[in-house]
Each structure stands twice: as structure tokens, then as C-alpha cells.
Amino acid sequence: MTTTTTSAHTTAAKDTGPGAGPVVAFRNVTKSYGPVRAVDGLSLELHPGETVALLGPNGAGKSSTLDLLLGLRPADSGTVELFGTTPREAIAAGRVGAMLQSGGLMEDVTVREVVALGCALHPRRYPVEEVLGRAGITEIADRMVNKLSGGQEQRVRFALATAGRNDLIVLDEPTTGMDVTSRQAFWATMRDQAAQGRTVLFATHYLEEADAIADRVLVLNKGRLLADGTAAEIKAKAGARRIAFDLAPDAPVDETALRALPCLTSYERHGDTVRLQSRDADATVHAVYALGLYPRNLEVAGLGLEQAFIALTEAEEAK
Ligand SMILES: Nc1ncnc2c1ncn2[C@@H]1O[C@H](COP(=O)(O)OP(=O)(O)OP(=O)(O)O)[C@@H](O)[C@H]1O
Image (cartoon, rainbow, N blue to C red):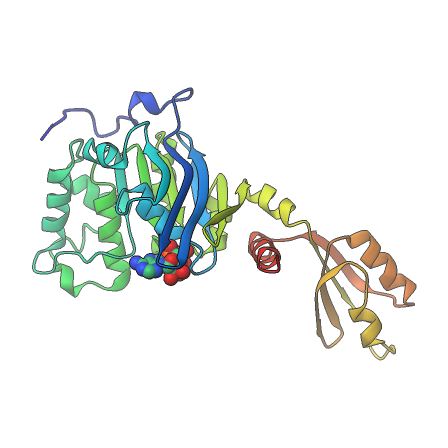
């Protein structure tokens, strides 16, 4: 095993700097389980220092993509490279840390013992106490692993993923089971890792996390890449805008005419409040006035990431 005396605060390896090749390269990768095509001709590249969120509905292929990336499963066709080499070689070189949903922790050991083992196995390890501190588990270091809550287990997994100086950190729904404070602390640590030049890829169902943390968002559906860009670009790609207004109380309202407004992609009414999504907000608002309504508190806004995500995946389902 290789050891290193590099300072704990050394940044990621030099060849991950600007101008270096991609950290991750998928080229036309396909993976099926029997009749289910979990990953369908996926091509993408991740670059040094990016923090990338992987979004998708249940069964979209997120975990399968991460499994292929980590070499845990072979692709049926296409190629997966990390740092220009195979996943196996990149992991053996200690360049990749991963926190997966599955995989039990050893049970009859303390938190410190399991983290110490993770550190010992890493070719570019950090000191155990530093790893415990970063994951916020110093206080529970002497507790048995099988006595931990779900959120505490997640923190131990996080400690194992950051036991050494990795250049790529892969996280599959890392904050599931964590309370709000733990989540915030977790992402603060992750931001710090990214600021040191590491590439971070995380799958999540929390769209607000993707919006707040990621500088790039990949939307997967049915194993295919539906959108790839900043959160703002994904919102723009969804195309629709939100319109909300209040109807004048007691004014006669033709519900059928409201539902038939032009360019609507969604319609909701709660009492006097109407909430719409429209492909062309100008045309819709114009038609509201043409109905002889006098909307009050009129608001027109872009979609949030969550609504954009739903609009994009629904549009794909409708194909
Ligand atoms: N080992 C397996 N055997 C058979 N089918 C599988 C296996 N693993 C995944 N699948 C199927 O492949 C598809 C993609 O699953 P995957 O777990 O990659 O999606 P996901 O986006 O991670 O979903 P979730 O958000 O629910 O975790 C699903 O239809 C799933 O049922």
C-alpha cells in the first residue's frame, strides 16, 4: 500500500486542474437488466472542480449510472472512463470516494474503528480524527455502529467517502435520513471539498439541494439524459412560466373559459385564487383580460427547478 506525507489540506491532484481531461467520460453507455433498459446510450463528461447533481424520477437510472461509473457493474456496451482510465484503476489509485445508498456497515465495531479501517485502506489517507471531525461524528466515535440512527449511519458513510484525498466524490442520495441541521453541515463540508478542486457528483431527490449546491444539473429519465445545464438553464428549457392571480370576490366566473385559456400546461383554482402554468404567459394573461376578468395580485414568474423537472419529465413521458 502506498502512503503519503502530504499535508491534510493539499488540494486535489494536479492533473485534475483546468485544461486536464475529463474526470468522468461516459460514451454511449447502455445497461439492461433483462427487459429493463436502465441506462440507454448515455454520453456525458464531468470536468475538474464541477459540482454536479443527478436528478430523475424513481427508476430513471441514477443508481445504475453511479454503479457503472464506479465499475460495480459492467456496461453492456459503450465505455466508462475515470481520469482517462478504467474505474477500477482510478479507485485503486485512491482517486474516488463514494457514498452509496446500499451496502451495510460492519456491525460489531465502533464508529472510530470503522473509520480507521477506511482511512487505513486509502492510499492518500487523512488522519482518523480529522475525518471524524469533518463528518461531525467525533462525539459518537466510541459508539457501536449497530446502535446508530439512520442519519448517523449516513454520516459514517460520508466519513468513509472522504477518508482520503479523492479527486472525485460520488454520493447517491447522501442526505436521506439526515435532519435539516445535519444536511446543512453536510453541504457546507461538500462545498469546502469542491472549493479544493474536487469534482462532486451527487444523485438526489431533493431538488432544492440541486438548485442550491450544484453548478451543473443532469436530468435523467428512462436511462437517457433529458437535460444538462445549470439550474437556470434547466428551468429555461422547461419553457413554461407560472401565473397566479386572485379573482374579484363575488364576480361571475366562467370556469370552462378559464380552463380553456390559451397555452396552458396546468390549471389550479382554490377559491378565488387561480394558479396556472403557460407556454406563453403573454398570450394567457391577455386572454384573462379578454374574458372581462380583472385579475388582482397578478404574478408571472419562471418555474422553480422542481416544476421544471416535472414539466420536462412529463413532456418526455407524453412522447
Ligand atoms: N439489479 C437489478 N435487477 C433488475 N432491475 C434493476 C436492477 N437494478 C435496477 N433495476 C431497474 O433499472 C431501472 C433503473 O433503476 P435505478 O435504481 O438505476 O434507478 P434510480 O433512478 O436510481 O431510482 P430511485 O430514484 O428509485 O433510486 C429501474 O426500472 C429498476 O427497477
